[in-house]
Length: 212
Image (tube, rainbow, N blue to C red; front, side):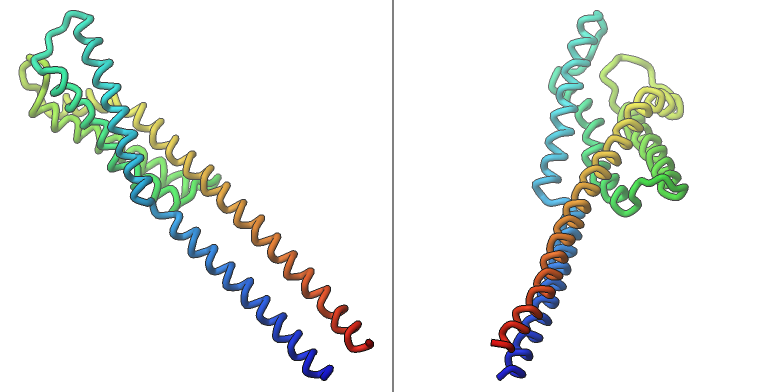
């Protein structure tokens, strides 16, 4: 009977270890799923940039009119054009988030170089996209300009804010992921301590049972 009870206790210990291992694997899978953006998060990103573009276009439109300048577009056309500029960030934000999680920012050469190069490329590409649209469609009556001139103008106007946006996204992702990893470690530590406590208690219970 004692041998049978000991075998049961030993089996229980193995089951507890297997259960802890399964919970650990499930948490890892949950974390990996959390790295990819959900549809709700993507919709929030798109809605946020659309709202920002509308506010920017509205303020810019009425600011230009207040200065007495001539705009050949209607309010809706101007705001739609201006919103399109910022909606480029709705496409770029998931890419920046994915890169931030693939190469987390740290005080090492490689992550810093990767993000410096990526932020510069995004600023260059976005300025080029805006320049292409402005070269074809401009709300202001003006003669056509060379593309490089338009591109450099957009780069000087948008590059500073683009760099700020990029590094702000990287910082937010770093803070969120660091907090998630900290909670995972705390939970794992608590469960490990609980499993160790069970391992310490069960032999004493077995000893008392064998001597009753």
